[in-house]
Length: 197
Image (cartoon, rainbow, N blue to C red):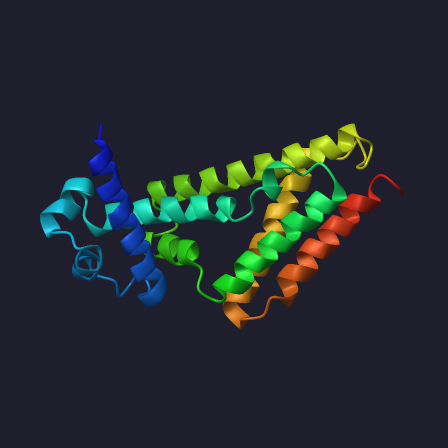
């Protein structure tokens, strides 16, 4: 168990590493770069991250995964009206417009190896949390009659996550946001139309 000071130091190292990776990429960022940026010693880095760079990258990836969901708040947890869904959609678009072609989480997972158990677990956890929040939103809309009650809320939430991630993949490849906007707008139009065939 870390002390308050220890937890703050660990967080400072993670935040510094995340900033370094956003600016220079995971492949070229070294522990020395992180040490200089965070004004820490190598022994401190290895104290908090005994596995070295891989441990630190996993911690940064976990923090970036948290940010994916944080950037969608407060809308993601309050999908109770169509305006709330539109606000969520706008928050997602805004996040990825600001991010551009550099997706820190995607780069980190690639660097760690998509097939490593730790990277897979991290990605799975993010997707499950995201899908659960969207599923809850669909279910709330079903309760008020705004969405067809026979619609599978979990599959609908999975499709929304896939729409975002597919659009983000194209954004990272082309620099264009149009596919992400189209995927989200079409998904929400279909969701809205489900109660009014």
